[in-house]
Image (cartoon, each protein chain N blue to C red):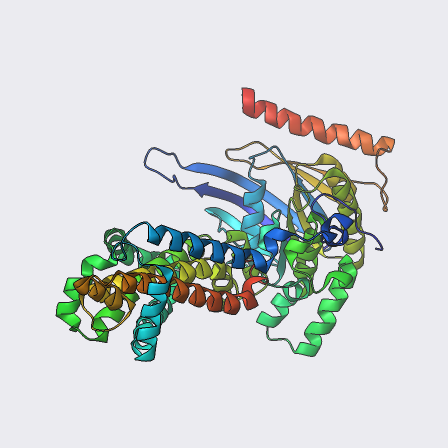
Amino acid sequence: MASVPRQTGDAAPPVAMAAAPARARRDFSRSPWLTVIVLVVSVGLWELASRTTIPILLPSPADVAGAAWKSASDGSLFRHVGVSYFRILTGWAIGCAIAVPFGILAGRLKWVRAVLDPYIEFFRFIPPIAFITLFMIWFGLGELSKISLIVYTAFFTTFLATLAGALGVEQDRIRAAQCLGATPAQVFFRVIVPGTVPHIVTGVRLSLGLAFMTVIAAEFIAAQTGVGYLIFSARLFAQTEYVFLGILLLGLMGFAANWVLKKVLSRIAYRYDVKL
Amino acid sequence: MAEAIRLDGVGKRFEARHAEGADYDALRGFDLAIGEGEFFCLLGPTGCGKSTVMHLVAGFELPTTGRVTVGGKPVAGPGVDRGMVFQSDLALFPWLTVKQNVAFGLEVAHRTPADTRVIVERNLELVGLAAHRGKFPRELSGGMKQRLQIARALATDPAILLMDEPFAALDAQTRRRMQEELGRIWALSRKTVLFITHDIGEAIWLADRVGIMTHGPGARLKEVIDVDLPRPRMHMTPEFVRLYNTLDDSIRAESDAMHHG
């Protein structure tokens, strides 16, 4: 069979598009300079805005840079960032590691779902920070209470996403595997688990963002280190520049963590048709 | 001719899904016998229970009454002796390449990599997908996806091929092309085929015999008509048209009975 009938949705990738002369003109929206310009303009506007008021309300970029320099030179900046990262990543990794197998099992086994469902529907509506006090009483003021809170945060989001994925595996796909001789265990590991991967990816990405929110709340209330502590302790002396520094650090930390996660996930993204 | 598939007095009742619903008898007293190497098309009005028959033979469902036997043994569940081609291309494994999809059945059976490679290549050649072996299913056209399903089902060398409206979602031209391809593949492999369709022309083009079902509920086999046309077949010959009209009248009588009876 030499030729395959052409039809809409045929396999030919849109290679011709990229070579078209119209594309030869630079696409400015993709230029890295755009980011630089946006950054410079924002800092400029910030500087102008800060001159209209007093530093305690809106510190200038220079004030914040000074605060960054000071806390970097005594090492506290790196300690705060490192401790927050440690809490976020440990809690997130543990939460996801528990959520994925339970989510898949709950999606495929009726009795697991029946047992878990009432709890899930109950706890789903309780935000993690509602547990801060309780976790402090149970797990003390050390790392355990903060990490437990993030485990809880990451678990729920990842569990619910994984559950939805496992529930939604195509029945015909499972039947196809059975017709090809797959045992129940092979169906589970070769069809259901890979079929759930796109949902797991969604879950772990969402829960990473939520872990950042939770860690800050926990560090506000029960910590002597961490970016949340940096922000919250600055209120004592009205050091607004440290509040700004903490917020900027958070943004950068989230940006970096998401970038690394995307890099890691991009290795499987094409196979599993995941949009990152 | 030895019997490959046999249904004896098969009834299938689906229980109500909710409190106010009623149980539904999809099949009642359904008899069918398909010989080894035969191409059998099951034709019937929409919703008559064609797919239920297919699911019973495949082993996805068990009969409420009666017996379903394949190769003389009662069907207890899905098995490698029955390969299946589904209507929906969602039945493919989208995270596996074309080659890996075809290899699936061989890998779960722990065949050697060398065997697997040879069998996969042979089946990709057979359906004309050899040049696309490294692609993912979503990169294929609708017709190519159904070719892939056929190659995947044939790779484990089942005695029986079950095809549930495999070309229904394709455009008319691709569908015609696939029918010709399937006729060629069947002539080479000589498998027993149970093929479900609501396309009369497709049934006449492909089948040795065409079974027409009565309308549901409680559907059974109304009649079986021999397609006594030489192969390779031609469309729209006088015999083809005569047969087409016979089948069309028979099916129309059933759907009329369902809507007005």
